Image (cartoon, rainbow, N blue to C red; front, top):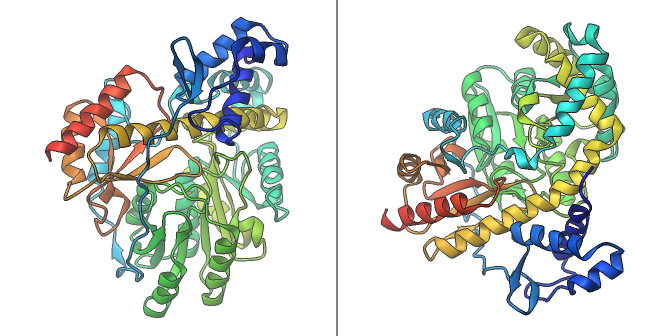
Length: 470
């Protein structure tokens, strides 16, 4: 159970996020808030200190607490390019593997891999659920949970998905080992070696790894930083190339962080249906919107369309659980078989533990708390980048998730920047990782799901200095 001061802090943070307290506004006095809420002065002081630590407010001597004024943000502009580049095989992902290995080094400031710091995760709730399952369901925990996976987990996932529309059934769900396997199974179900797959540009580099491993060609479709995949460019691509599948992250895309409007989602679904192309929907960040409203999924908007929905709990509960899923639609039997031949089954204990967390309501309570923390973390990182990085730097305006896409000024080579930063003990993700054709040379992605402390701020200052001298 959370301490009372954290409840007070969370409520005030929500009001700040919603604009009830504007940037620069003075917050009510400590004694006033204590009287209004029926709590002690010490509780309110602790709540204000928590808000200060999270970057929401600042204390001014003999004056009180004020909402931090946001630094002027120079937003990333949409690409002028309207046509897709020719499809190509994905190669040269060695830097991504170096980045992944760096994520295991505690001596490195982790700004590269999109893995939340444990402070953002419900580690205690997960540990308790795992222990209960291991103690109370010893027989099941010791055996395989054959595809399609634990029935109670599939029921809970189907219930949550149905709340976004579409009437998903537990029979539609296949449990996977994370979202990466879900994407791989979905692509294997609808493509063959050498096929062309339309992807967003920039695209999550993990997806590009999957395409590379399957011998598929990536067709990069320019993406608007607020709306997502450019449908005119996609329509043009259909006229020129035999596209066999389309992969999108419509809700809080990695790395841009946009949430595709419902009108755009419906138009995308209609365009794909017209050309008989299946849609693979990656919704791994869908639960992490900043406005506390769960956005629609493409599958929920069009349950009868040819859509394969992929997601996982890696960004919310714990990456180490490795529990993902596919809502496979008409491809369920094929994906269930592919799951079996790929890995036989996903781990049993994590499946049962996640099912318990969902059924108990603890997962939803955790989401209500963490969304505001991620919004604050992204805002604070954006402020710091604009403060320390050279003039001409631009940043994305995420609507959810916890990554920031940064455009560096001039002819900065982000690959070289990443190598120099790693020597300084700082991990970043260079822009070309997010493109099959090596675009975005002067971009980097930063993971904001980090505890803000002096070490992190020093790392950003060091990184900014490296940008200055390139």
